[in-house]
Image (tube, rainbow, N blue to C red; front, side, top):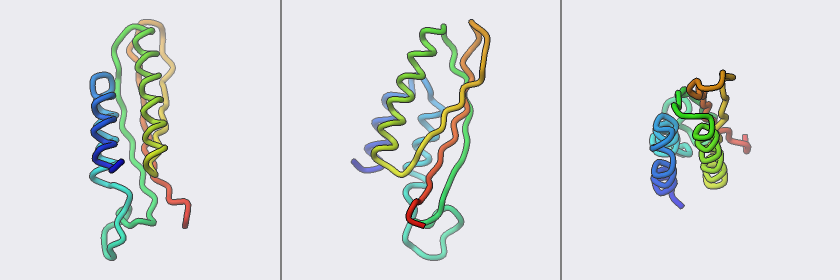
Length: 114
């Protein structure tokens, strides 16, 4: 599966529930990508460079809907990690019952062969 196909699949699944995460994954896969073998590009763009960035999002909904959204997010993160070198760390802000779900996403590409 190409990065574009993976990005499209993840966007289809996540954009209705987590549009900022969907956009961040699109940026990771399409804009930053897996890195280039070309010489002279900026930091983070070489094939051997590590890259990371963060995005935050608030998801409205009842507690059952929020848990369902988290389950779908984690399922798609498994697909992302399986088919690319990107990983997503999802931090959930502890909240009170009835409040929106506040999430912080950290997208990381770590090249292990360094």
